[in-house]
Image 1 (cartoon, rainbow, N blue to C red):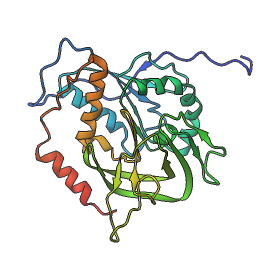
Image 2: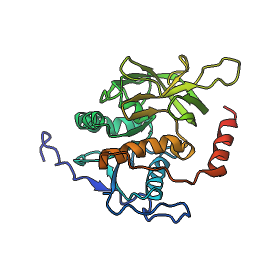
Image 3: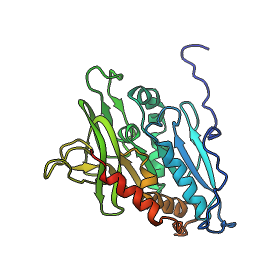
Image 4: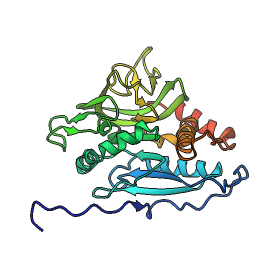
Length: 286
């Protein structure tokens, strides 16, 4: 093969190495919706962008969809693959700087299709490194793995610059749509929001009275970004198991995209266990 030739892109693949999709029995499971097509969930770059438990976000979406009566078709996209023609929900996790370098060009090549999905209100969750590349640009700090700025797909109106200081620790943010959202951040990228997106939430003060450290940049008190049904965040943990309201919002939008109406009913299985887990997470020291 000459240096000017490139391998043909691989077809979209099923996530064969992912979790067992057999529905887990639960006394609260709703009856399967036999007339509803399966929800198509796409995981972007699971081999490169999947740290700090981010795979748990996909697993949470699968289980909650099944417990609500919907079957799931799980797809994975890796570097060199073709994007599937039609999906209902996109999940992208965090990764090391080296992982961002490996996926950046491939992600950029699919930017128009992913932006079109967003304008069709396909819900998406982009965490940490993927959140940065869903913006305009990631400018690495001196000495980082990436020597040059990484161009993002400009789905979210954000820009990120690397720094020598890491924002790391447990974090609770206040959101208008989902109430308190809890997770764990570990990043040195400092993200600023433009006018065409809004913050997911505001950082709850910790440490000294009025402290606003952490979140997007450790300075302005914001965390994450939202555009239409696309959510970007620095929260790992993974974030969805501890925040079922956010998971159910994404699933409700996915069902609406698939069947054309509001047909998602959240599973009735929260009880004291989920709330206790949230309380413990929110009470942990920074």
